[in-house]
Image (cartoon, rainbow, N blue to C red; front, top):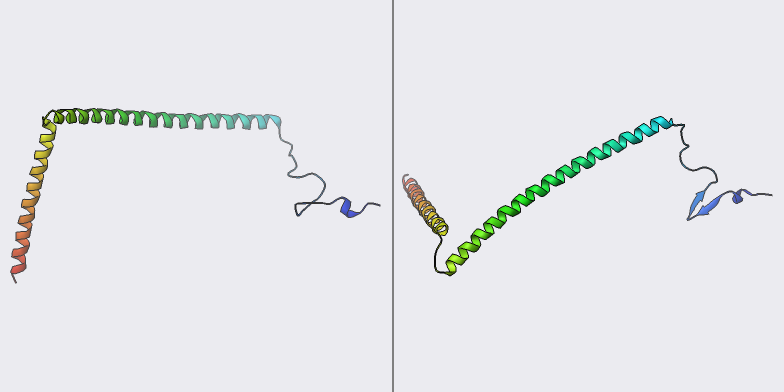
Length: 124
């Protein structure tokens, strides 16, 4: 005689019952399923195209940045070679004089502001 325990399996601490597992397949029209598959493929291709466009734009912008940095590096190399020969490039002179002028303007504005605050603090 068959016992109930003959039909129930215990696997890994879980009780498994005999029979079909999962969902029962619904009666899907084959044409509708095929059309959904085609639509899904179209959407996938469109997403892939957008992704590749984005990546191509990203690569081109990075390439432009690399070119600009290479030009800047070459300029600095030329400046260094000129300075090794004892010459100061005009660009560096302009930078230095521009910094000196801005520092002198900042210092003069600080002195002016300090004078005003001193004058204001003494008038009671």
